[in-house]
Image 1 (cartoon, rainbow over the protein chains, first blue to last red):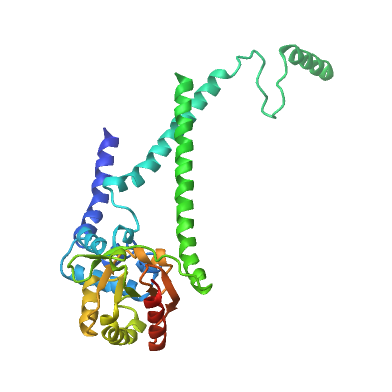
Image 2 (cartoon, each protein chain N blue to C red):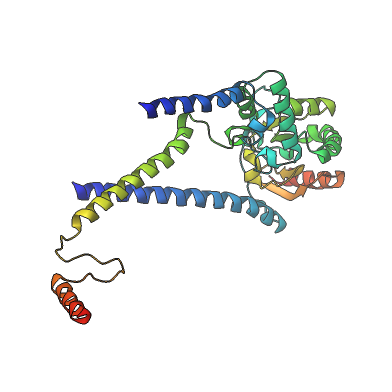
Length: 155
Length: 185
């Protein structure tokens, strides 16, 4: 219960700046999410003429009160979806977001299955395990003989 | 059942790898095709001009290269933010006015540009030849355009002729290559 409350509070705290960035974006919020079509880097890393023009366009739209999504939509209308550094989370592009998660899930499942099989396949052994120095532990018989020898030595 | 599942997984994995290899090969082939056009022109060959269909900047319909078959075409790639394009535009407009009644079409392809900026540019320089908008730059990959302005010449038969002009085109290049494009049938 405590964990759930903590999670909800953390999610709310994280959502506030995201909401503010969506409604009242800054140039910095968008400049690292928009690609310069001639130099193929994000526009915050470019000073090419078109990147400078795109930054000016973003400033104009921010001043006009557009949200982050609206500005992105306007850029996509001009330059196509390739202008976005990350594909939108809708339609066919959703695959780009889901496939890595699916891949990671499948990988985790395969690892879990392999680990389980490996654990099951380990032979049950009555032999004593290795000692702390990495060598085989003494058998009870050898242990008894060492004790005897030590006792004789002490005597 | 387990064997069948394993087989399906293996087939899926092989399909994904095959798809990735095909995409890579397609990308390489496109780049090679663009590079090949320049080499072919340098050898004096006349390779087919890569096809395209683009919307007019003014918003009134589309133009495809195929629809211009039978005419000599001057293809000029430009953008409103390109400084040398400002120097070149009056020369292109003047040549267009000289040649438009002789079976020659000038086509400006505005690439990687804001439509509003491009319209202002067209108005400012009084361009009257057809201007197409390629915001996504889909044509520059096919033609291997690396900078603006860049000009190509297409013969009446739809094949490229002459040379690829990188940078502002001059009058003697225009006259020479338009003559060759008109002769190509």
